[in-house]
Amino acid sequence: MNQYQVPTAEKKLIGSHILVAILALALGSFFGPLQAFEHAGWDFYVYLKPLFKSYYQGLTVHGVLNALVWTTFFIMGFLTFNVVFGLKRPLKNMLLAKVGFWMMVVGVVAAAIPILANEATVLFTFYPPLKANWAFYVGLTLVVVGSWVEGWGMFMTYTAWRKENKDERTPFIAFASLVTALLWQICTLGVAVEILTMLLPWSLGLIDGVDPLLARTYFWFTGHPLVYFWLLPAYISWYAMLPKQAGGGKMFSDSLARLSFWMFLVLSTPIGFHHQYVDPGIPPIWKFLHSMLTFGVFFPSMMTAFTVVASLEYGARKNGGKGALAWIGKLNWNDPSVASQLLAGILFFFGGIGGLTNASYNVNLVLHNTAFIPGHFHLTVATAVTLSFIGISYWLVPYLTGRKLWQPKWATIQAWVWFVGMIIFSNSMHVLGLLGAPRRVPLNLAPYVPEEWNSRLFQVGLGGAILFISGTIYLVVMYMTVTNKQRVEKEVEVPIAESMQDPAATPAWLDRWAPWVYGSIALIVVMYGPMLFELIKNISLTSPGFRVW
Amino acid sequence: MANKKGNDEEFHPTGTVVVLVIFVITLIAIWATIYMILVGRGGTL
Image (cartoon, each protein chain N blue to C red):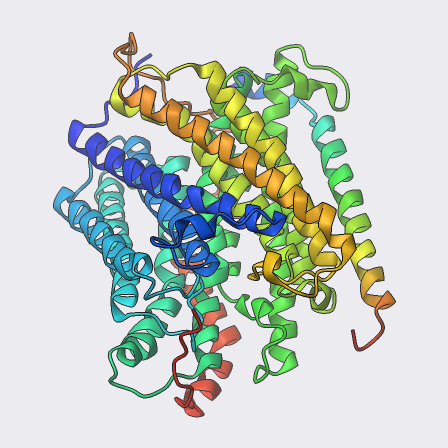
């Protein structure tokens, strides 16, 4: 094995990201089961009263730490690794990367203080007119800006590489990571504008009110592509790493993989109105147009599904896999990193279906603001993304620390326990939603719960308990790994699946940035411009802030 | 490279096609079920 040696400084930086991510996951995951238990009638919040005041405070901690902090830190660490390892060169400007990282850390602390003090119980969507303490908004801004700064560092590294490699195709893991970082830079403009022009001055008392509709529009400008910011790093692993780990497979098509990443960049931002189907003030034509483009994202999603499954099938058949589906059994299920990501992919099968039903203009009316929605995003961000990141950490942490993964068998068990827990939890949430159960409600206190919900509410609690066990096993495995006295005999091999097709044969237009970036911006201007112009022209900063907790 | 490509070209991802067909059938079934719930609740929900 003769692989590029990532410099120690970069390894430390990447490891610091993973450490903060896992700490956030640990604390945030403690509150996840509490929500589920509450639904089942087992309210533990009464015992936490002196520290945590309400179900909603717990839900805010869970959402912010798990959906925002765990993901963003893990992703920035993983993308940095991919750029450095893929381009085979250190970061062009380490200071910039460190500044970005510490801005993010300070931001998390700044946001955490008001959340823990019950001064920012506004959930992770922080919709106004719910009003948080100003420090919460400052903290979120710092996290976003810090991640931008880190992204600039990645772009500088790429530019330096490109100068020396004018005719080379960008190595796939670096290419896909840079596209993901660019997507993040573009889409977070929405939430940055929301906070800096409305929420922060409002929380500081500089303006008296906000315009909730405009704020929601800014939020969902960021909110939907945020889903792809979460998913694309998992896709990078599924495309370019998992096939190698799962059975010596190869990436089925380098060209298809690159095209799908470009399509995600172009299509994932100008579709945010599909989260606002029931918002008054957005004309139906814009909701319809955004719904059509949302279905456009189905194409790169299916290209991804095809390429990833074909890459896995190739490896499995090489190892003796037979039949239409029996080959799946020949994948390397004993490797915890593989098992985690395969199980994440299986549940994402259903997450994708749920996403398409949510995106359907009329069908969405049955599902909107019901328990179906958290049921859905626990299959996507809490499984496809989180379980994949867990799987990645099973090789990445030993690679970064030089310490052996502690008890790989327990790591594999952890993945299966998560899979079982999530099936129970998510299925019951989906069914509850179809029965009309609202989301974001402590249902144990609701006087209107019909008899037919009870068995499903119990299953929500049961699923939450199983997920809690899985999360605990993960944290134990990670802690025991980083403190493991047994070191790896040789550096952990970074699993990179070579492409079946020579990457040099990939068309040059799939490695050119300008047309895709200009195309993305143009589509955003067309799909958002007129409506944003109208909303800003008629801005109505009249809604006072509410504290309902 | 030519040899590598030759071997890879023999691979036909038939299992992948089966997986995706199952996906599409499941998608249609679930979508249609929810659509029937919508219709069953009446035009105004």
